[in-house]
Image 1 (spheres, rainbow, N blue to C red):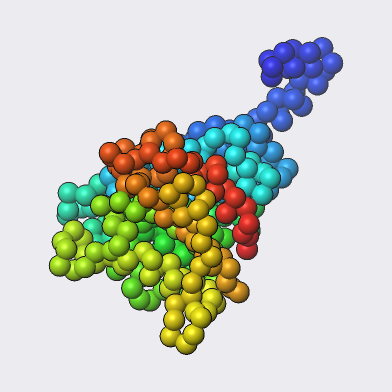
Image 2 (tube, rainbow, N blue to C red):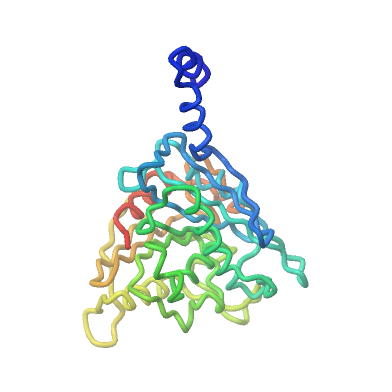
Length: 315
């Protein structure tokens, strides 16, 4: 189409101006970035991107051992039909680094096996700055989501005053809520942070019911039912009596998928507990093989819940 238009404009004497417009238009589709720090990420820009309009930006973090392309595949966030607040959005699929001492690959801050020689927080700021220098990003609509170790990192971003000040809402999926993610203490967001937590009830990698120090793996993890209520309390919800945890409104969003919502004065806390689902990003296609043999759900998280949650929140 561009060739035919340029051919017609050639006869009208407008071809040089048209070529200038083409040269200045930012690239769409998948773009692989390498930062000056040598860290990388994969950016997806929808074909309908309009440089005259600000667009939401989603940061998505893979699990330990994962990668940007896998995260793009299992989340389906690059589906061109998706919208946040009625607008197409950009998605940055971040890439974790290897641990230099342990045999752990592609990992994030907050885990006991994190690579302490790199700065994952600075990396997040670098991603946002790099994308914003080329694309028209709506700074009030930057979001974070992640799976497993990347979900724990997403939870950590929600707890930090610097990152919670620039990211509008957070959605950790089956997060690895290690002590380094501030799951037990030291969670000090700059403001009440909207949280959407999704977890398979039969997850054995990051257990729904938590893990004690004696149960091995990489240290204790909280029972997610308590972790959610702590966020509700943090966001201003109150229990039915002094000393009680805030209780949610519960509905069955899909057969066996239970929606818990705390409509708190500060910010919403929302959760989905999915019966029969393992360590997987919920999808009817069962794309997240980390949850095998329980990786398939009867709904699609991304297009049925996630973008709607993000749409409700902005800075």
